[in-house]
Each structure stands twice: as structure tokens, then as C-alpha cells.
Length: 159
Image (cartoon, one colour):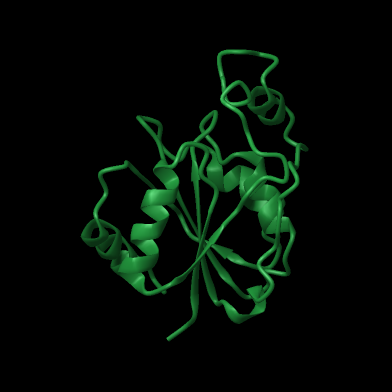
């Protein structure tokens, strides 16, 4: 059995809850992807064209710094990467996270939280960031997703 990691970025706590349930459901380690500069409520105001999140998401080359790296990433074969959907894709901090490691030979599985959006172009936008890894199609969950729901989803994956 391969060693699994659930790494996640959560802006409001919803993704954190899903990530914790997923890690529990599949007996995986967990790691929070934290921005070096935490996001404020104003930073996350997607209706403000001058907010930090809007500026970052408008620039495909944006790579917000992360506060800390996982020091034993080489131990994991499968990495579930969770995030809220922003502008129909993963926040660019997820690219920062993926680009911080040698992921060759690993399996990356995105999962997201959203109030109504699907995965959009998430895989396409993450593609340049996971050189040498296998990226599976992800799934969107809501805050009500149970451990049983998450476990059932993982069982459908070819791991």
C-alpha cells in the first residue's frame, strides 16, 4: 500500500473540513498549505478587481509564497491536493505548492470545494506544475461531504 498525503489550502475553513475528513477516511497524513502572507477578508473579495485574490488569479504566472514546505514529500506516492475553486480553477498557491517539489512518479489527485462550480479547467491550469507526475481527474465536494462519501470516491480511483 502506498503512503498517502492530503495537502490542502483553505481560505474559509470549508476545504480544511473536507481535507480532514478525507485524511481520516483513507488513513492519510495531512498538511495545510499556508500562504506566507495570510489572506484577509478584503484579499478574498472576488468582486473587487484590486483585491489580492483577483490580482493573483488574473495573472497565470502568479505564485503566492507558501509559509512552509512538507519536509518528507519523497515518502509519498499519492498526494491528494485540496483547494477552493477560484475563477473555475485552483488558486495559484496550489501551483506554488506543486512546483516546490520533485513529483516525478507520484500520483496527484485534486479535490475541491465549491458552492456551485465544477473543476473547470483545473487540470489544464495545473499541468505545467507537476512535471513527471500522473494527474488524475478530481472532484468537487461541499461542506456536507461525509467520510463515507470521500472514502467511496477514493475507491473509484485507479490507485
